[in-house]
Each structure stands twice: as structure tokens, then as C-alpha cells.
Image (cartoon, rainbow, N blue to C red; front, side):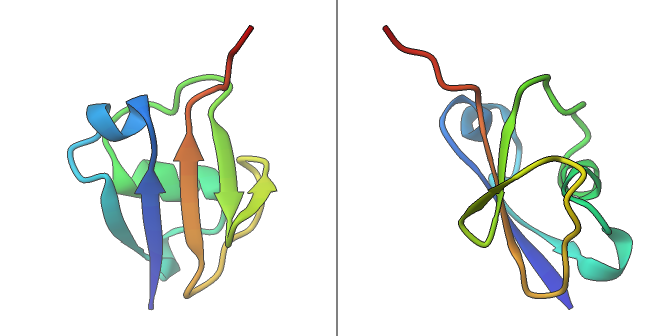
Length: 76
């Protein structure tokens, strides 16, 4: 009963375990997944996805989901 967690780009460099797994019974939302996967506070404007679909931090998660976190995208 796990949720796979992935961190990308600069987040991947900051997180101790960029390919973590979280016990699904401890996480009900995307932000709960972040809290279980790392001791770092979630930065503002982090982009989140659940099973390859963009989601808000308040979106629900379930056993077997893959949750990914991306830093804000900028460009010019």
C-alpha cells in the first residue's frame, strides 16, 4: 500500500530521496504526500501531478498513485 513520489528539476537536487515511497494510509492529499516524503516545507507555487495529470496540493491521493512535484516553470 504505497504511493510513489518523484521530484524533478531543482527539487530533485534539494530532496534527500528524490524517488520516495509513502505509505498510502498516511496520506490523503498531495500535500500530505509531500509531508511524508520529506522534512522540507513545500515551497510556494510547486506544481503537482497525480498519475501524470496536473493537480492542486489539496487533491486526493490513493494507494498505487504516482505523485510528482515540479518547481515553478519560468521562461522568456
